[in-house]
Length: 122
Image (cartoon, rainbow, N blue to C red):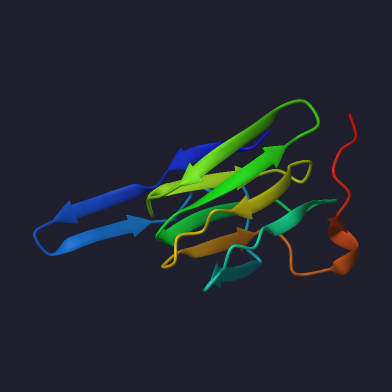
């Protein structure tokens, strides 16, 4: 099941520093980011083995998640919120603000065979 974690942030008069260290439950093998999104829905898949951590480092977006038991929506609107997506989590990202930058950390490198595009049927 997908879940949110708060990333440790240090704040002083100079600004903020958010740390991603020892908080994601996997070794990071791939990093990508999504930005400049129009009204499109992104994602629409789950994985065979990849675990992901999604952080909207600027702006906001919503991630819909279905783990075949629970359907949820998560609002990512702060760079200190991190959504962990397990392989079974079929997800779609939508409602990107114009300035949104969604960064994703992944436990595996890209392999097309790791993607399952069909949503769960209920």
